[in-house]
Image (tube, rainbow, N blue to C red; front, side, top):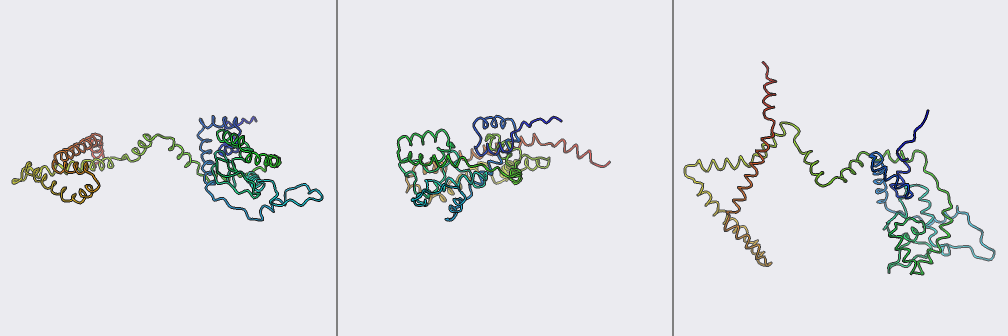
Length: 353
């Protein structure tokens, strides 16, 4: 039976792509595949979310005896006769930090991704005391390590290389680290145990991550339309309730006008005049303290505007009329789309004969 190769990248390749650990050519191939494959794209989003949560974990400081336990398992050449044994102060610079990062690389993503591109994290202390000078534009310890490992982005790599060309101190530190890192690169890489990827992805809600990524890619207009679609009534009763709420201000205004015009001792002109007087008294009385405060702050323009509204409430009344007209128009639109005939028809259909 012939077995066809899967068109999807392997899970390890997607995990390495999310961790920015793929070679450039392989990363470009995965990028081209992700443009057309929602399944792999959601899996990469899940790994990215997981890596982001791991990066938020606090960094634990190893104990003082950790380095001794690690160095006890590292084979080293015996010291030459007549020379003192190497102490921690005489150790090559960055040995502790480099060994710790190598141990982390043996357990993929168990403690974060050291040396990631564009990393701006705090610089780890160097137990040897030999570190590039701080301040004055000197790169940090992680930047020099990333330069030697080839994990820096092109822009940061160019800046660090340009600095090393002009700074003998940082250049000496990088030169002392090169032999040590070359020896560490010869160490074997322990693969992840079987089932590691499945165990991790089982705890990640891939569908939720995919939905979050889809919403993030939508424009503000599309998000607004989706929200309006979720708020749209789904039944005839819902449309009736929405229409009633929309027509409520119009009904209240109409009821007030009818009550005023139907009263034998009241006229519309007298009501408008009385409302104008009351509104002027209320604005001037309630806003006296605010006007005084504005005057102390030099708010002459604001005072003029408030006084203009108080002395001429006609524009305010016109605005209220425009608001009522808009409400009436919206109520008319709702009434046009309400399925009232279908309600009547369904009522007659279900009436027992």
